Image 1 (tube, rainbow, N blue to C red):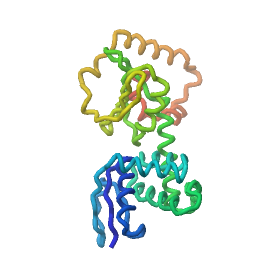
Image 2: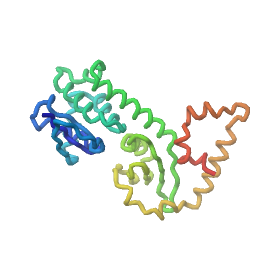
Image 3: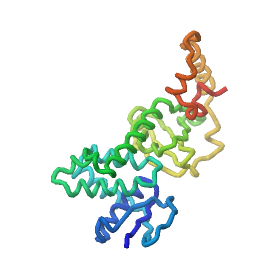
Image 4: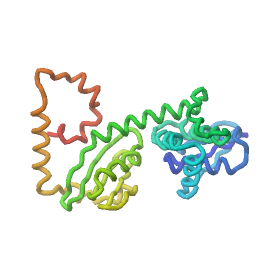
Length: 255
């Protein structure tokens, strides 16, 4: 009988599931990982719910980095950000493959393996979305001087883009809010960043803009209009480069 480990749909949840499935010693062919959102029950399977454990997840990630290299670590992290019910088991199979090879770094190149191929496809999707968010994300200055940005990406890319802004905006206090997943990344000036529940935000405070924010927004909109060439206006091409789903959160498209 196959044992299905139901884990949280997050990187830490999936890695905890990998830890528990591996440690169960039931045999890799007798276990399977699923995210807890996949609620379809199967016959001849027993289900075991996995409680997310940050320490166990970190142990697995360290092992992947040490035995399989940074490329495999990146593939696991990015693939976990995609909404696909197959991803948890595919990540598990990739790690099992890498641990069984003399040179685990070659595991990500075994694209003839369906699980490795799926992880690579998901990695590319998440990477592409994260790269877009680095350019499309817009910060606004709140009354207390904190920079605030709101987004609703289809993939859970917040942990993937936060290190970029922590490096670029090291001397700023900022918050990036993922409205779809009700999660925020918080950075303190000169320090690190961390993830938190969006319920901690004060809805009144995040609507209070600084005195200069309206002026900067107006200047930015004027700049965007001034560099546009009306004769070369091509809405279809613009939609390909800047999809409509990003625009509600972008200053230059707000009235």
